[in-house]
Amino acid sequence: MATELKTFTGSQFIGKPVLADIEFIPYLEKINDFAATNGLKIFVTSSARPWGVPVGGAIIHPAKMSNHLIGHAIDMNIQIGAKLYTSHELGDFNSLPSTIQAFFTAISKHPVLHWGADFGDPVHIDDRLNKNNPNTWNQKFPIIQSELTGLTQPGIRAVNSPRLLFLTTPLMEGDDVKAVQEKLIGKGFDLGITRADGLFGSATSQAVIKFQDQEDLEPIDGIVGDTTKKALGL
Ligand SMILES: [Zn+2]
Image (tube, rainbow, N blue to C red; front, side, top):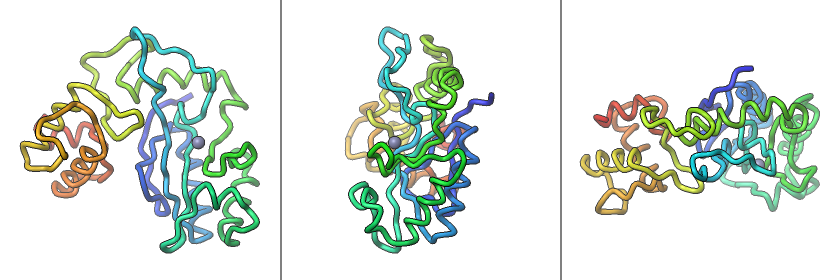
C-alpha cells in the first residue's frame, strides 16, 4: 500500500486544486477521461478533508469513514460552457443534458468508481474504499490526516515537519500561516487585513495564487509547499 497526499490537475478539472491519495490519482485520471469524452469541465468544490482539530494531540477516530478523509473522494459541480450544474440539477438525472448523463453512466459502469447519487449525494464521486476495504481505509486515515494537519504520527505533532498550507474548511491556523502572510503583506499583497492573523482564508489563498503566478512557479495552485515557501524567502 502506498499512501501519500498529492495534488492532481487534469485538462477537464477547474476550481480548487484536487488533493488526493496517490492511489486515487489513477481514478481521477479516469474521471478526467470521461469528462473529456463528453466535453465537460469538473469544478471540484472539495477533495481530501482534514478531520477537525486533534484534541489533546490525539487523532480521534471518526464515526463516519468518509472517503474524503483519506483523499479518495471528490465533490464537484459540472460546467458546460458558462452553465454550472450544481447538486440541485445533478440530482435530477432525467433532466440533465445527455453529455452529463453519459458521464455519470460511465462512472456508474466503472468497476471501481462510484457516483454518490445512490445515497442522495449527486456531487460526490469516490472509489468505495471505505466499504470494500475498511482495513486499508484505517491504515490510510492517520497518514493522510497527518499530511493534511502537520502531524507525522497519530497523536504526535511534529514541530519541525512543515505541513502544506492551503484553503480548507475549517481554516488552517498557526504560526506557519502567519509567517507566510507576513511575507505576502511585506511584498505588497492585499490580504484584507493589516496584520497577519495566522488564519489561511480565501484572501490569503488568492494572494498565494497571485504570488505564484508572478514568480512563474509551477503549479499555480494556492498551496504553500517547499517551492512557494522558498520563493517567499521562508
Ligand atoms: Zn463528498
